[in-house]
Image (tube, rainbow, N blue to C red; front, side):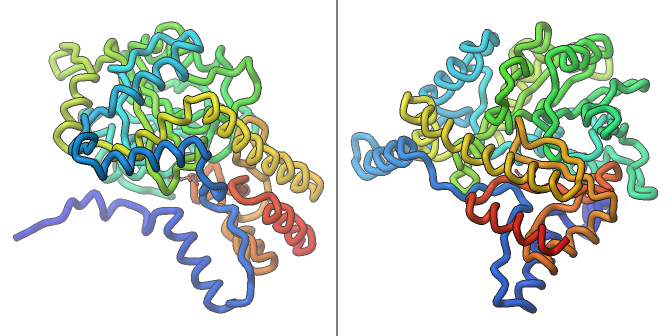
Length: 406
Ligand code: MLT
């Protein structure tokens, strides 16, 4: 008899953003005339940078000619893109990362979801609360989470991020083996300082643990004192894997390109305590299960690092940060305490009411979609997340409508 992976029965009913999409679709069906403004899922609205479009067109033309046509590319990504990333995102910031340590992929969501496959099923996993749901759900699917009781899984070590700790969790008093961190944070928008990040690196080194560092929003950091990559912290090469994405920086949510950095010094252990390099394991996983990102898309991503591309990306980020600033100041003006929005595209709004009720209120009274904080974990109750990814006119109108609705 064919049997299912019963860990799937242990998941909460549906993926957060699918649940929101379902509720919005139901509302829209009942209210076809309402122009719903979406500030829920962080999906970009501005077109791709000109430099990326031109590079993609040229690559498509190359695919039309026998002499320049490309079949399968390297599973790890083309050297032209890996070299540009190593130089611009890492070495230029004094972070010692080489091109061979970079694995190009079609999304940070897939990479942060898939990476747990290379670790044992009985390790202790520490996950922030609130959190991007992918980290937790994929560990539930893999059977690491234990049973669900009162909204929390028994085997997960929750790293609470609250207004009291500035939404940067404290080091756990218990021992964790695998630690997920995301800065600038999704959903709270909080950023981490070098000193705090260095404490996590030290914790990982002392406990023979590994940090999975999601830096998908690093391009939104405006405060020069904040770390843009975990590899700015000495010693991180041995204990951290970093995830990055072109989705939110260069508008690639629909185009799909991201990368994961697995330094060659980064290791984990087998049951006997022997040390194994993770670079080789991840390479083995990717070459078995992944055939690379398409050539035109990698060419487009490469263009992000040209002079023109850099300028265009900077202006896209400025655009969304202006939205973020407007949302934050308007919501604060309505009397809500807010976090994020300065080095991040997300504003974490303390509504002090049930988050799903506040979500329904904004949808029904203002036609505006946000994300209920409770969907990111218990510590998100009483909050909603508002995303700055939309056109400024829509953001301004959304804030006017929210002001009227309240
Ligand atoms: C979010 O809204 O949290 C993100 O857009 C989701 C994602 O990147 O998968």
